[in-house]
Length: 41
Image (tube, rainbow, N blue to C red; front, side):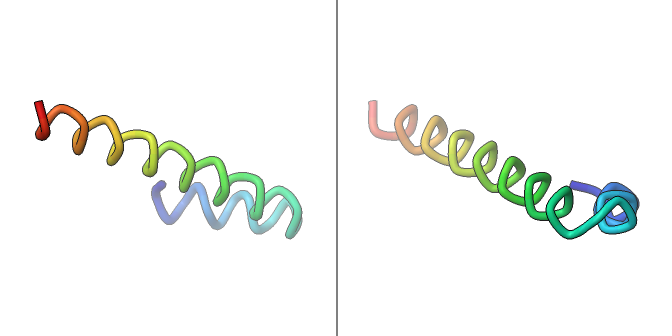
């Protein structure tokens, strides 16, 4: 997530910033799991 996106979400409110951060972490975990699964096979 780019810094400008975090700044804009922070301006909207703490709940929006938390939602954007959790969504970003979820996508990163999914992508890491996908890459690790492909490396095993």
